Structure formats: structure tokens, C-alpha cells
Length: 249
Ligand code: OAD
Image 1 (cartoon, rainbow, N blue to C red):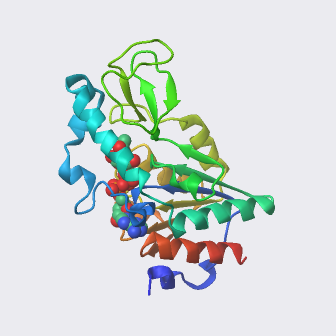
Image 2: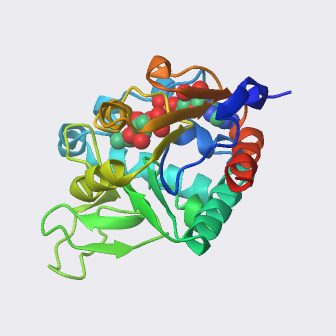
């Protein structure tokens, strides 16, 4: 039995018409993509300073490209799970009722769209997009990035990097995200440890505005106490059950 049973009394099934959903690595864990901070997480095997900072890229671009090329290879074998499909359904059905669901993801994997979601804000970028570090041109790319990858816009080589936000860089679409949080009547965080800002601060912003908040995670996150409702268990089970309760209203 998952922790959906922890939904209590009058909270059960109550929903907003404008829902802001923040997702993290936990929503893709059951698709076979590792999380970052769990046991065996990516940051237990790699030093993020080496592979996820501009300084790490400047020191050793080949190491950084190899790290993200391996993640591209992993992603090639991954498929959306029931949590991705349920969120896409929530988006469709709320939209048909005149509401909205913004899915704002810290994930770079694209599995929300593969699961049918249509409006997804990729605040940490996208793994299957390459960016030229020199001219900032971006292009869709499933291949391995190499030192001799040529930028189609400026013609340089040795500048290819993933279009992924690194530590020390500013997440994308922040203005749009802040506006969407302010417009929401329900804020839901799914599968995120609540340890990386600014995303980890969105729940406080929502609470300050009196917006109801809900956490869905395998276990209490660092921010657990900031949430009005807390549902614990695997995303592939808890998210579809939660979506049912929201749509049942
Ligand atoms: P984390 O690895 O920090 O947290 C993943 C969360 O998902 C944890 O709280 C787990 O308990 C939970 N989890 C694991 N498996 C789950 C499952 N099956 N169902 C539900 N929850 C599960 O990942 P994020 O919070 O996404 O940034 O990390 C945020 C950012 O830090 C990432 O976007 C990435 C990383 O460094 C960059 O690389 C810039």
C-alpha cells in the first residue's frame, strides 16, 4: 500500500483549476534513469564540480562531454512510466475543463513529452540538445558530442556542450515560472529532493501566496514540512492515484 492512504478527510481529491507541477529525478527513476542524491545516485559516483559546472567544462571539456554522452546513451533506452502518462492525462483533462497544468521539470530527459505532455517548461535544459559554448546556438542532437563537433551557426569546433543548466548558471524561463506559480491554486512537487535552488524555493513562494501545496515523493524531502499534503511511495503508483483523486472532483 502506498502512502496515498495518508490523504485525509476533506483534503482528499480537492483540486485546483490551475495546477503547477514541479518534477525532479524521482519521476523518471522508474524509467531506469538514476536520481542524483539517492544511494547510487549520480552525485555519489561523479563530482558535480567536474561534470556540472562551467569551471569543470573549462578544465576538461572531453570529460564533461563523455559524462553527458553516457547519459544520452542511457536515455535512448528509457521510456515514460505511469507517472509521466498520468501527468499528461491531468494536463489534457484539466485543459478540457478550462483549467491549466504547467509541468515545470528539473529533468533534462524529455520523458514528459514522450508521455504525451504538451506544455513542459525545462528549467534545467534538455539533454538531447547541444549548445555552442561560444555563440550559444542550440540544436537537437541525439549523437555523442565530440571535440570536433562543428557548430552550424559559427563554424567553431571544441565548443559543443549539452544544453543543460550547470551549477553556477541561471535556470531557464524563470520569469515565466514565477508568474505561473503566482497564478496557481495548487502547487505540487513530485520526485524532487528539494535541495537545489531556485526550484527548491518555489514551495515557499507558493505558501507565501496562500497556495495549497502537495508533495509526492518516495520519502519526505528536505522541504517536506512546507507542504500541506504529503504522499509517499513510488511515483508510478502514487501519481496516477493522485491524478484520479484530482479529476474525480
Ligand atoms: P534528487 O536526486 O536530488 O532527488 C530525487 C528525489 O526523488 C529524492 O527525494 C528521492 O527520494 C525521490 N525518488 C526516488 N525514486 C523515486 C520514485 N520512484 N518515486 C518518487 N520519488 C522518488 O533529484 P532532483 O531533486 O531532481 O541539476 O535534483 C535537482 C537537480 O539536482 C537536478 O535537476 C540536477 C541535480 O544536480 C543539475 O544537474 C543542474
